[in-house]
Image (cartoon, rainbow, N blue to C red; front, top):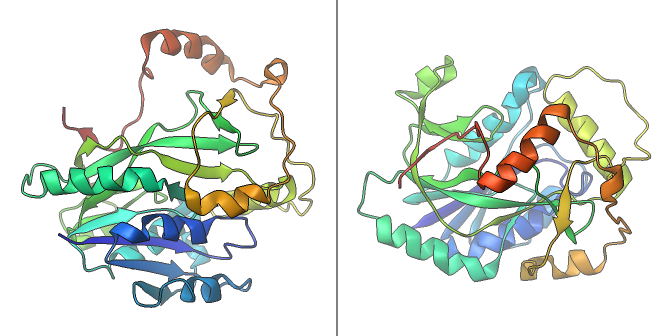
Length: 295
């Protein structure tokens, strides 16, 4: 049984992605890691090349801005990396996602246990969405709870939508022609993804968000990256766990002084009504799932 890690990145330093830590966090259980590196000018490629030349394979790419609609360029880049892995299982980690070293044995054990059970096509992992600083996680109904991050290396599995998750298609051509595909049959591994999407200096965060919108075909001429307001959020809670060891240096050098004030929280009307109900029920009503969970 071999596990291949794969991801994609472009100008990771410029936009404050912990992409080095993302790769390092899964490398111990991967026999190889394939990274699609877009045309970067900030030293991203050079930094990846220094990590582990024996395990890491770099695929140089150029992002096609004609694929901006719906963020399709993200899926394209994920598929480029996916097409170059050789393992039995694929482990997708995005540039702002990091795994905890204590959870790696759980992942290996789950894969080994289900290796011969072909009805299990993949696994979902829970998410911890950090916001404002490394001390807070966003816990409202607006964030996704689970995503497919591990699956069998079936060449008919492709990145779905804007690289949100993965689905299985009848043929690669059918995928290219817009087939919706089939959701993967998955089990859950209780090994959370530490999602550091909302932990950057405010200027970098605003620039990242602007670029993200642009890559989803939003037309904007924003060039003032000052003043991103982390207080403009519905709900965050104090994080009481430990961070992955690979994040120690980055967390130690962080300068955020963000302190969440619940009195200033911003809720959409529907969410303000639904959140208390869902808190009592213990699940999200009408939750979108890009997978089929095997009980």
